[in-house]
Length: 599
Image 1 (cartoon, rainbow, N blue to C red):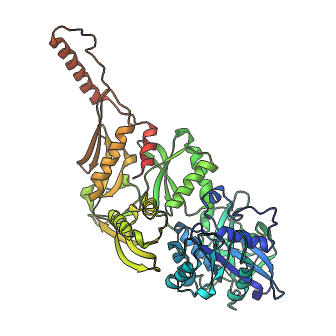
Image 2: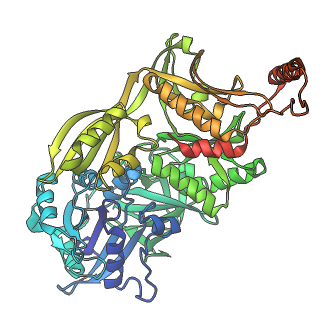
Image 3: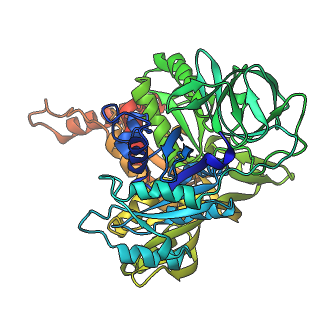
């Protein structure tokens, strides 16, 4: 097939704006999938994706479409994840395309993530076809969406196509506009072999499977290839396309999208965004945009039952095969036993991994309070990165601590500006800019410490704005602040699982909240148990679990008061001695309750 008859495109949208439903209609109209085989959100293979209504892994598919001009076109739809945590994967998927369908919910209008994804597409030089979806709903406001498109995204409202992905209204017109507005793949004419890896997965029988877009040259079975970033050489065992399942073909030409199965067993050897070239005719320059994906959020994951440790390690290994951005390494906690320190791209990524461990591998796990990567500068000039509060050096050795800062764009109705400004201030952030999106909406740009948005910021944003607010963020750098390690001590012993790094101004309130929660969940002992929150050697909050007390004077039916006093003094001495030698065993349920409590 000539390049003139190929169109490569993505669908970009905010979460729940109808991206997967539109993909279903395109598959149905092009007869790629028989109607009897089609299920809702066909390209979202995981149960978790269907339940949450989000795309976690991208799913490419090739469609054949007989256009009105009589030609049969090859459409390559490269589906993209919709959440900010997966923005690098989105950028690589967009790099494999020439155009994008921008889907906007007619009832909600332009959202924060819509802006972020459009900016990614524009930076990649993609042709954008704006679609206003869900026009069949009574609450739809098409005029508001058109106004926002022009005001926020600078896209002419005349270019908009009105559709309903659910019932198929306007979707045939979209197919014709893809041919008209999205250019065919350009051929550089260079005598080189270059292909972009925009995603990869792992097959336990065949090894690594790379999803590729061929830029220059071709790929064929038996060809010797080289990965540009690592220099690793391998032979291609299979070449194929997505129909939407993987089916082998003879070769992949320049401009086409498909998959290759090289002779590589370890997923760590291939990286998303890398360039594949011929082992003999090595390209002079790699394709732009490649970078190493680093985890930004860290959390400890431990098995509830210590017998499950080996099974948890095996389960995490299998998960990492399909998700190279997820990292883990063994660690030990005095309180929780043997477990793993895990790295994630963001909070949603962390939730997804934990949920998959529970569902797909039937693991009963507990996760510690999430933490970010801090830069700690010591007095001897050494700089170390700390992702676990337990590894923080002694305060006397620390010169300064820097924390990661994000730039957040929050889109919300005008009525809630004051409440959101207040929320940002509580989270130690500051607003740098406010722009009017239209007559009813505003976009607030704010700088916030990443550690402050980890647990409850998104929930509070939705709560304050009655569900109408949305946020997108990106890491903007590091900033010095007064950060300290908060330790929780039970009966004068530090419980490392509860240690956190907090701002000095929040140490008292955080310590008090944790102490009060622990007071409720730690069972009573025969002696009083002190629960203390400490910063360095200073106690900032304290709660006591009252002692269980036997009524030793119950047998005294009168007589002299000195008899009762003697019994009480004897009991008091016993409890004092018991406190010195007694140990408090914190039950597993207490850890679960505390870590569920989050903030």
